[in-house]
Image (spheres, rainbow, N blue to C red):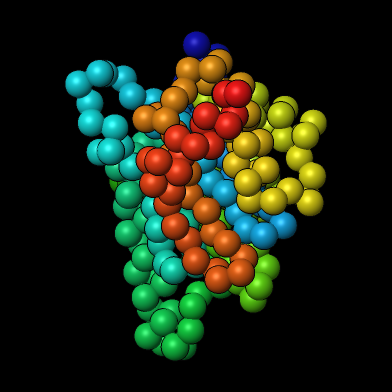
Amino acid sequence: MQPQYQMGYDRAITVFSPDGRLYQVEYAREAVKRGTTAVGIKAQDGIVLIVDKRISSKLLEAASIEKIFRIDDHIGVASSGLVGDARALVDRARVECQINRVSYDEKIEVEALAKKLCDHMQTLTQYGGIRPYGTALLIAGVSDGECRLFETDPSGTLLEYKATGIGIGRPAAMKIFEEEYTASLSIKDAILLGLKALHSATEGKFDVDTVEIGIVEKSDAAFKKMTKEEVASYVEQFKQ
């Protein structure tokens, strides 16, 4: 329950509270914190994105749950929070990539795309009659032979990480990364480390049907999502 003098400051996005907070943005961050866990790890030869799809019913088709998206040949994103909001941002990101290709005849840089998305997300914290996006994205890609991994949040904040997590299991995942991450990891080792972080975040409640993996290899700067068979092989290696 908010103190009496603060009540009412969460009614509109454009109103600051007396202590300088925008409650609607903080509520959007809470929506992200309640979302499924997604992790990103930068390796020597690429970047790995891993998400927990959290299947809530045995009647649900696991393939219909999409949390990792291909944005361009060299960029992929993982989302946590409101899936509908994430899909809207993904569509916008794809359009930005196409605009860059048409305008400059080259692939968009990962940082440039991340900044464009965050500029758009930040705009939604300034105007009444609209709410912030209730989603966070991990944006992974290769630009000029360099692996880049960015994290966005509903306020439009942009941070670059070597390894990070979003969603409900972020604290557990970050603890694993801070203890065990090294810059010399290969993609294979990064996947196994990501699965360990996801295992800790979900308290061991994951299997091949609830895990989705995407990778960007540095050699060919190509993003791809792993097949169920490839994911199964890594899950089996991790559980041995």
